[in-house]
Length: 372
Image (cartoon, rainbow, N blue to C red; front, side, top):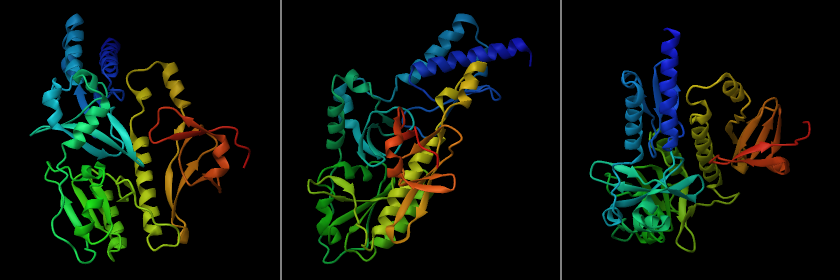
C-alpha cells in the first residue's frame, strides 16, 4: 500500500474516532489492519464494527457530512421516545454489573447498579444520562417511574415448611430480577417459601428464591455459581435478603456459621469477575491513530493488577491482588496483596493507597510503600 493511501486511511479513521468520542463513544478504537473502527454503544456488551472502506470513496466535505450524519444517528438513540408522557409507561429498571458505555445508573448493591431502559415490543434501549433533561424531568423521577412500572407480583399459597426453591424464569417482559429493587417485595414472599426469603439472580432471565432455613440453601450457592459462570448475561452469584427497612441487601453469614464459606466465596467471585471485566475493556487512550509520543506515553501507563481467589479454610475465601512492584500498577480493592513472594494484608497498605480517578470498580495507586 502506498504512503499516500495509508495517510488518507489514517486521516479518515482519525476523523471517525474524533466524531465518535465527541458523541460519547469513548472506547472507539481503530483497527488499521482491517480498516475499520470498533466502538460500544451504551448498554451493549459487544462492540459495533464500522467498516471504513465505503466512507473512503466519499471525498472532501461530503465525507465529513456522511461521517457526521452516521454518528449523529447513533447519538440520538432513535429507540427513545421524545415525549415524557410517551416514555414514562415504557420505563423499566434493570439490575446489572458493569455495563459498557455511559447509561444513566446509580449504585444499589456491591458491584451492581440500577439502570433504566425503555421497553418496546422488539427492543430494550438504555436511557442515557442526558435524557431526563430532554424529557423535562429529573433522573430521580426517571428511576421512580421505572420502578413503579414493575408488576410487583407475588406468589399465592402458603408453604408449611421451607421449600426447595421458587424459580422465576423471565419471558422478556416480567423483569423478575429487577423486582429485587422494589422495597419490601422480597420479604413479602416469606409465606410462599416457608421462611425468611433468600434470593439469587445469577443471570438476567433467572431469579431463584428459597428460605434461609432450607436444607438446600448451601447447595444452591454452588448451583448458582455454575449458572453465573456459564451465562453470557450474568448478574451476580451472591445471595440477597431484606433488611429491617425492606431493602434488598447481601445475605450475611458470620464466621463460624455453616454458610460462611459459601457466602464469602460468592462475594469474592463477583468482585473478581467485575474487575476482570473492567480490565478487559479497551483502553480509550489506545483508540485511533497516534503520534510516536502518544505511543511512548502508553508504555508508561499503569498496569491493572489481577485479582485472584484464595481459599482461607475456616475463615472463608479471600481476594488477593498481585502487585508487580517493578512497574506502575493500579490495585483492585482486595483482602490481601501479593508483593513478590510476600503476602500483605490490605490494611498494611491502607496508608499508602490513593484512589485512581475514573475507575469503577475502584482502583488504587500505591505510593511511598517501603521496601519489602
